Length: 216
Length: 248
Image (cartoon, rainbow over all chains, first blue to last red; front, side, top):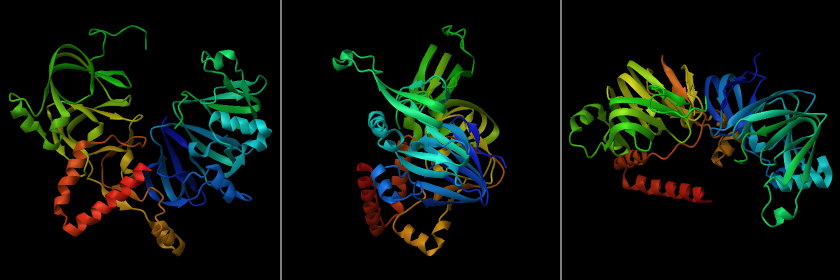
């Protein structure tokens, strides 16, 4: 069975079949052929106490599930689409509003950043403007991620990779994310380079970086 | 791409300069949407459709879409005319004795051997005949074949197939829980679709909020003439609710 396929850098084509439903951002369907129905569902499945967590975290993107059988094209607001294939060994961490669509068989969970890196994780969330929560996708299947501009996938391992917080999209695998700040007196007087706060990634996996510092 | 600056002799003739701009080797007349021109070489005039006396005949023959006359100009003369639209991809398409309907806000320019008419579907224009036109799209255009259902915002246009009909997908509401959710205003966001059947080609782009089309407002306003007082009253209520939602 063929998986997700990019039609061009802004549109992804996805097969839907019984037993192979697809979860997608609400309103992201462009076109479909065959007999497909769209049903609204809520965001990432709540875990223990997830309902409260979701309400607090803002990581409850409205989703819809496509079932039936056919071929669906997804795209959203002209943003670039990047495909990630998860083989079950690593999970993808990304903000929930960047998830365009993914196999319904994948597990999604809202994760408190403090769990990943203690206080530093929480600081990262605050600094990058992502908030204190992120969405983790795991299992075997395909995920389509939205980004402003194109996406680079940089391997992480051996040497650490440093990324601008605004250009950071997400990461795959066992990757540790730390905030590294080099704020000096120049920043205090407004003569900084504008790159004082950076994300330092280490471990093994890869990081997704967008070619723009614009949020959407 | 080389770093060489482009001049009137090095610009491509009737071809894309890059994905976002197109160079028309003008020798005669083109219809052009206002604001589509970004630069030109040579001698050319841009005349508003509504004001010109000399062009009245041609306009009457080829541009039978009075609602859009204020949005369009006629470019006449010789030279190189560069066209672009908001950094979107510009596509040049040839029509051979055919018809193609395109979203009015995506149509940038067309040769006067094509006839322009208003489509039955509000906000769309139909081109008939043989000629060339330029249309913009967010990302490359995806060509698809019917039978196909399309999100209205993602639609760029369609060629050689019958006009679409509306398809309302509310199948998920059929069970009791779904019906209750539906009453509470829960939507999948994809209830309204355009349904294409028959032979032809459908043109799609990555979905986005389309630019406001002043003619669309005019068209809808004209149609409210068919409504009675009670219906107008309820329309006002609906619009106020929409406005409040938009302002939040």
